[in-house]
Every structure is written in C-alpha cells, then in structure tokens.
Length: 269
Image (cartoon, rainbow, N blue to C red):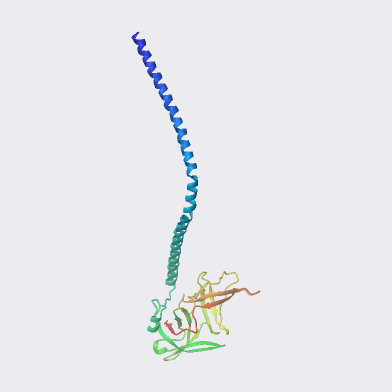
C-alpha cells in the first residue's frame, strides 16, 4: 500500500512538472508574439521621424562624404604628381648628358654634372639666312675647341663646330641646310638622320614607312655619329606618308630656341 501511494505521488509530481512546462512554453510563444508586435509598432511609430531625420541629415552626410572623397582624390593626384616627377627625374638621369638649367650656372659658365669634359662659352654672333644658320662663340683653339665638337645648352643639342680660330669658333646649328646628324628615336631605338633645311625646319630621314613613329617621340643623338650619344635634340611634331615614298616624312621640333641661346657648352672629345 505504501508503495502504491509513493508511485501515485510521483505520478502527480510528474504531471505537475509537465503542466508547468506546457505553461512556460505557451507563455514564451505568447511573449514572442508580443515582442514582435511591439517591434512592429515601434517601427511604424518612428518611421515618419526617421524619414525626416534622414532627409535632414542626408545632405550633410553626402557633403561630408564628398569632402572625404575630394581629400582622397587630392591625395591620389599628389601621389601621381610625385610618381610623375620621379619618372621625369629618372628619365633625366638616364640621359648621359646633363646640364644644370638655371641662371646662376649660366652666369658662372654652366658646367656639366658629369660624363663629359666641356668648355663654357658665350654666343657673340649670329648668322641666319636662307643658306646658313650659325652662331659665333668666344672660345677657340686656345681653349681646346676643335672642328667637329658638339655644342649644347641646358635644353639640348645646338650644333657642331665647323671652324675653330684661336679665340673664337663658328657653330653650324642643327637647322642649317648643311647639317646632318645621326640620331635615334628614344622609344623605339630606331636609327635615322636629322637634317636642316632652307626654311629652318628639321626633318628626320630614313625611317621606314613600316616603323611606328608618333607625335611627341623624343629624338636623341646616336652612338654612330661623331657626337656623344643620347644628347637631347627635340621631339617629333609631325608624321606624314607620301605616296610611293618608302620612308616617312617626319618633322622635328627642337628643344633649343635658337633665337635665345646665350651661354653654351662645347663638348670636348
């Protein structure tokens, strides 16, 4: 009898536990629905406020973002400028002939940084006609100047000494009709010859019509001439093809302004 009573009590306790569990589960689900309903009501309630808040602060946010984007773009622009500057500096350092480009060095006689011994000189005369483009320098054989030496300024090649006296010399400019100088196209390394003309235009000759040549290509002296290689000359300004001609017609814009040359360097061989 005692055992039956004990089992009965255990059964009642188990039943109570089961009922409590069912109640808890039911309440939990009801509370979940209640919470969801509260959330929905809250969202609906705050929707107009949120819209007004967003419409008010959205322009401010966009303005701040545009400032940030501008700052980022400016930083990228400055980075590109620095990169471009480094590329230009690297290019300049790869050109064997380097000249300081400032007025002080001109007044001091301008000197090459390295690579070639030079003789500083000043232009004391200028001859130009349909058949002639020459300058006269205040240096000659007594200074070590000889025929065939190249003459440059801070911008590039000017010409070649054709007559050397004791104390002065004549320089044939690269736009003179009798001027012929072996050159290279810097980008493609193709060889050619530049020649002056009666109208003072400089042309690049003997470049095959199949060879790619573009406006802006840099022209430098080649190692196959009498001058030191890789002296800057100018850039391609015009490229045309003539019917039946196996070579391109190429005009060169010199880096040197021949009307403004004043102080120069004669490159000693």
